[in-house]
Image (tube, rainbow, N blue to C red; front, side, top):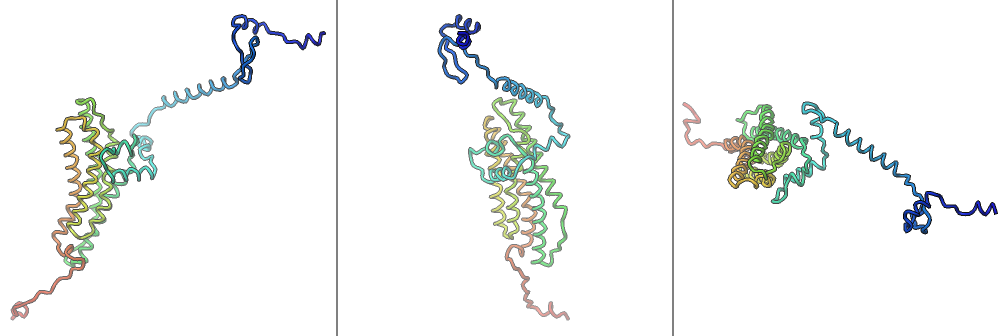
Length: 309
């Protein structure tokens, strides 16, 4: 009998008190299945403690990240993030600047709130060197066809081209960004781009001029101007289509004047790159009239000029 009493089921006081308070409650077993009424199973979640600890650790990490101070603009680490871009991103942005189309915003589809200075820096540097190199090559080819032309290396063209292009890519976007910020106070609906996004737009828009400058080595004036106009149209269209979503919130007069100024300044840069070549070629018709130009012998009709007395 004693063994039978020990093996009999005994209810705990806690379970009986809980069942007395809620007699209709159904209990669950440790495996999540329904247990018959009249019995209470206590379930302990072993992962709850660890889950709360992980949540506390993540909160502490977020607080530490917020408290971390941003580096100053005079430090190298501040500018390091602007050069943190891979080759595929740069190529995608170059492709976007070469193929502008209405409704395709360069900032939204290619920059994606991550402007970089790597692409604009090297595009401007490459354009400056290509301008200087092709300018010297033009003089070398001209000297081979016309011995009267004296050639001397013109290294100052690298400096002139570099200063001009970098000033254009930084000063014009700065003026544009400042004007749009001022108009934002007048027109509250306007949301201008950041200064770095504006610099990025101008920098990538100049890439089309690099192959165009190389094609200007062809000594045919009308073909050179055709290449120049095509490059200007593509580059200016990239700027206009990108700036239009911002300036369209302003009045029609301000939007028209602003976009016209942007296109005019871009055209002046293109003409400035093309100007010295066109003036030199036009002054040397032997350079572009034929690829192999030889001086023609003059026919002397008077014997006095050939045989002086």
